[in-house]
Amino acid sequence: MDEKHRTVEEVRADLDNLVLSITQSSKRAYRTLKRIDFISLKPDIKTALEIAATQLSDAIAKLEPLQSQTTALYMKAITDGLTRLFNRGYFEEVIKPKIERTPNAAVMLTDIDHFGRYNNTYGHQQADHALRTVADAVRSEAKTNIVARYGGEEFSILLTEYPNQHQDAPETAERVRAAVENAIIEPFSIDAVASEATNDRNLRRCICGFLKASKGSQSYAELLRCYFPNNRKLQRYLQCLQYITISVGMAVRKSKESAEHLIYRADKALYEAKHKGRNCVKIS
Image 1 (spheres, rainbow, N blue to C red):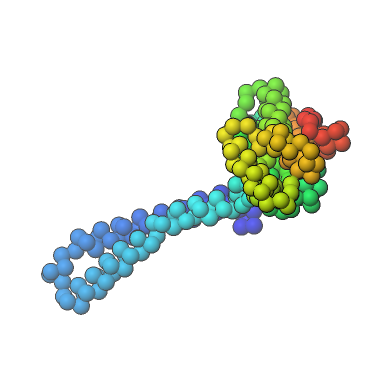
Image 2: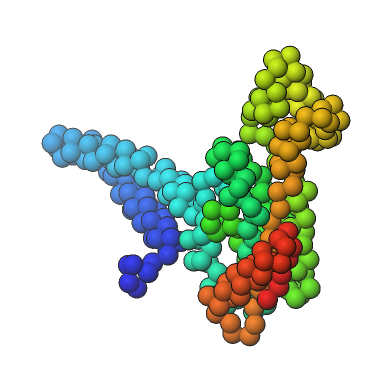
């Protein structure tokens, strides 16, 4: 196989096999050395074999952790660092063999609505925090299906776990959309929300208290709306945080359809969703 077209999984498998082979060979050699009757050997041969046995023992101790290290490197290579979802490279790598084994597979592409404006308004830290929250919501509804961060604010899901994709996949898409709409994007920094609301130190301390007390009960947004109904700046801030939504495009695989064309149709459906009002699901 051409080295340029080897997948990450194939490289990882080769590394695992190499480490395992070397480890097993070293252990066999070490056991052979340990069975030698060192007493009957000449001093120089005895010394050389003892050194070899020690070196082999050290080599085995160093080789065994390599398997866990290659696993860690493999996960790093296929995972998005921000959201801890799979990355686009892995998604595109596994989709072809997956859909070949699942004739009725479906692909879902999602895009956060007006995320550029959100990022420009509240900064990169809050935007990254929002991305993680959206990723968690998408992952929670996608269950065991493959979920990846496909682009900056775009996520992809490969659905292969349902017997009736034409019925089940659209229902999953709607659950994903609703989960994001209902997710509360907690502020990256409680103090940052307070400072958005007011420069008054006592009032900021009061707001921070409400935010911390709201954990596990009702949302911080509802608490602040009740206690500061006339603070327009704070209301606008909370409204933006509460109503992050996504547009969803989905395509269910047709007979013998390629992975590339399946993604193309899902992307086309996503484009339609974004131009038909956003916060909706469109199926190609």
